[in-house]
Structures are given as structure tokens and as C-alpha cells.
Image 1 (cartoon, rainbow, N blue to C red):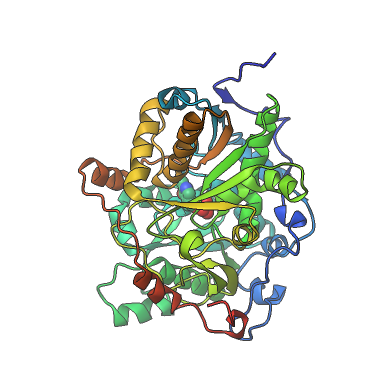
Image 2 (spheres, rainbow, N blue to C red; image 1 turned 90 degrees about the horizontal axis):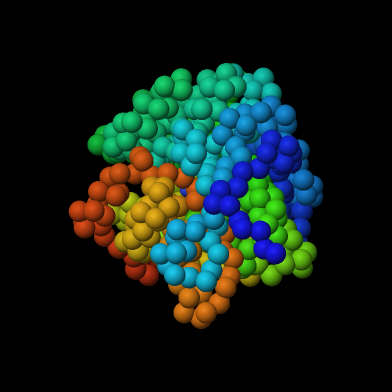
Length: 462
Ligand SMILES: *Cc1c(COP(=O)(O)O)cnc(C)c1O
């Protein structure tokens, strides 16, 4: 009587979610509040208003509403690239000869090539609705800058993207996509901000860093009338917007009566993972399922598996509020040989709390094993995955092989967050066999932990 499940399932426009899902409504006490580093006290709305859009702040601080309506204008923009397909990985199952059923939600079918557009769309809309003229952000690898340039163009906002200088030189085509959508790309550090000028005076030859780009973008937003800063991961409102991934996946799987046994996502700042798991996690927190949730991170930047649960800055320039999260220290620098993305030092406070409370398992995987999985997947399922996404593929393959060994049938759902067309330098290293699997030593980690602030809130945690 089992319906044969199609290779791809798309929801109809009528079936598309009309609300996002706020998993905090079912977390006991949500997570510890952001702290103002100057006072050590919880951040108020007023602390945040100069930097972020009002509506995003309200969502950030909303710990009670389970569903938050998606405004019609955002649902309309979503129609240009959603629903995304829920795919049954029949070809991967066959090559692995596994009794497991494997499903993935593919978020790479838009020009930015990743799930980041889900939150970019929402944040640009709220900026426009507030009557702002412009927004700023930083981008490292470039996916976020591209997604935000698309959203800013759609809603008619000006956008300045501070792009880490080495990336803007190494990924000139990313930069051109951003410029084509009408945004201004400023290689960081730049002469346009005090933070940039200070760094350039001190280190004239620097290729820049994400921390420096964040400081420049925040400074620009604070000094420009009718401008705010937007962030592409980590924060609660970003996870809220990404819940569209989990809601669509759940609606598609329920058509065939499938509830996953295991849900797997790659974890950088935690936004795609948090969004993918949120509706299922909400049920788990209410005792309605026993799904196993798995976060996959690179062995070279292991914030969950080897980090500390403490208050830390969200940026390496130490300008943001303090967040309670798993962190390697805001001064932690992953090895320069690390090509696979997911190089953020911290982790979403929601994901951190769920992990701390034992609702989520974390694994770390080595770079060359990740690319082995990426290439196997590309050959049998056709999609060239982003290196970040390939972390989830690796863990999925390992789980499916375990099912084969144990002769057990499980349903596995994973998030395929994006495509790898702009990551060919990393694939080149893999093909040339020059890829390196450096794993930080305890001494490397200790140096990172030294950069976690020694404030009262961290007493006993470090
Ligand atoms: C940014 C990015 C990630 C990691 O970010 P999260 O906030 O952890 O989801 C993963 N995959 C792709 C393709 C990305 O662009």
C-alpha cells in the first residue's frame, strides 16, 4: 500500500507555509540573553535599535509565539525561488547499497546558490517597511552578500557589502554578481570607515578578515542616516526565517507518511540546521517524536565538539553584544588550508542550547572525507554541492553505511544548502591532491579560548 515516493516533490503555492516556526516557544526558558559588553547587563531593544531593523529585533526577542506570520510581500518574493524540491536520493541509495531511505532538501536553486536568500528576503523587506533607504553587511565567501544583493534589488534598497579583501580578489565573479544586482562592493579593510583606516594604518598589507568587515559594516550603518546592518546567520531571527526549509520538508514528507528517523545539517553559524530541524525539534521538545538530530562541522573549526559554552563576542573585532554559545573564542582563526567553509568561531545560541541540553548530537568531519562525499554525490545525484553542504552529505553517507552494516532501515533527511560553482578553487585542491586535513591541536584551541572575554557572566565556564 506504500505510495511510491517520487524523485522530487514540490509543494503547490497553496501548500506553501504562511508562517515561520519559532522553536523557542517550546524550549524551556529559551537561551540566555545577549549581554551588552559595556554594562554586562542583558541587551535592551534600545541597545539593538541603532544597528538592526525594529521588526527583526522583535523577532529576535520573541520567545513565546510558536508561529510568526510571513508577510504577503515576502511570500511573493519567495515564489521566485521557492518551493525548493524535496528529493529522494534514489541514486545515492543505490550506489551505497543501503536499506536506508535518503531525502534531501535542495536550497541551491536560486542565483545566490544557497539557503541564505530565505533570510535576506525577510530582512530586506523589514528594512524597506521601516522606511530605511539602505542596508550594510559583510561577506566572506560571498554567498550572503549575493543573496542580500538580490533581496535589496527586489525591494529597492541600497546595499553596501564589505567583502573580505582576499575573497573579493579570489572570487571576482561573486563580486560581479553582487554588483550586477546593483550593490556596492567595498573590499575590506577600506578607507571608508574609521575601523578600516585603523587596520590599514597598522597592517597595510592585510587581506582582511570577517571580523574587520563586520566592524566596518556596523560602523557604516551607525553613521549613515536611514541605514541598518543585517547579518546572515547565528541570530534567532535568521533561524526563524530559515524555518521555511523545515516546514516545507515536513509538509512534503507528510504527503507520503514519512517521518525521518535522523535529520542531518551542516553547521557554520547554525542557521540552515536550525531552520531545517525547527518544526521537528518543536515536536521533539513536546515529547511527540524521538528523531535524532545531527549537526556536522569541520574538524578544523569544531565549535560544538571541542568548544566552550560561554559568553563571547559574535565578531573578532569585539564590537557586537555577547552571546551565550559554543565558541572557539572570537579570536580563533581556522587553518588557512581550510577550504570547506563553515569557519565561524561560534554557533547559534539556539543550536548551542539544544546541543547543551542533549537534544542534538554533533560530529566533526575532515576536509578530504567531505570532498570524497561531495564528488560521489555529484556523480550519482548530479548536483555539484557547496563544500559546506558536503559536510552533511558526508555524515549522511556514514549513517547510511551504518544502516547497511546493521541491516537496519532508517529514513534520513539532510539539508543540501547550496551549489559549489564558486568554490572551484577548493575542488581544484581536491583534484590536484593538495588538500590538507589540518586539525587544530589543543594548544591551538587554548589560544582561541584565551580570547573569550573574562566577564562575570563567564565565571566558572572557562
Ligand atoms: C553560509 C552557508 C552555510 C553555513 O551557514 P549556516 O548559517 O550554518 O547555515 C552552509 N551552506 C551554504 C551553502 C552556505 O552558503
